[in-house]
Length: 373
Image (cartoon, rainbow, N blue to C red):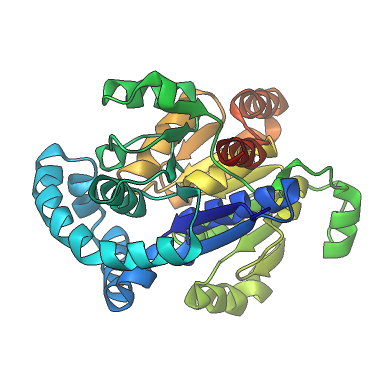
């Protein structure tokens, strides 16, 4: 019997889109260890030079000119202009896509970002194909660049997103509310005590986890400095991702911190760090927040990027799972208030539990396998 074949598509190596496809891949192989999977950065595959340029422009825009991204994001006028450009780009790239499909012969293609989803959707128009196309949304909002008639299923993170997809013209039958895919390790029962001992932390002090996604974005240094002024004992865990400059800045200041501080760069044990933490301070990327929800970890959201992160923040705050930090200098006051208000922290944990979908990647993998069988 021929092995089942699936292609997972993302763009940008250090991104939530890639984390999502990795989570789905692991879930697929957990359920069927004989399945053949290609997990591919499709932007790099079709346009390796352009990918580097576009990534630099994107990161520069969201760091220095976030208002530009706010204007471009889900702007109908901009979408109409991009649609014309997209037709040309897809026609140039589709021959490479056809080569990939002819060589690997996938039954299902899963996209965690709108760019590859659109390219595969147009491929299915140009070349009649039995390939099933699944769009996996990794934020709590569906922008218009996701919408294509030839998408077979949309994976929505919440009922609210499902309704917005319907409002944008997607048939309800195509929508599965399965959640944002997180690694199956977030469903595993981990020993807090063992992790605390391994990291050399204390059993009885509150632990604050500070992150800025894989890129280490946000005012992390200012947040740590504000926490250093808090007049109560606590322990701080900081993950800087691939942001080496931030890591070096914090490393140089460590001797001046009165609280115990654990400093990490890019790590693969976020599930462990979230397990032992009492609160997370983070930018509201879809994957990070979905992971925190799985761990019922109260969130303090800082500097959401206009567009998808702002929408994520609004959703999480409206559900009672997060609070917004307006300015880094306010960190010490917000954290002290939360740590002293046990009832509010418990309400936030319960709110997280109500909207979390810890089995998301397994459920998505089951759908994929059902389409192949």
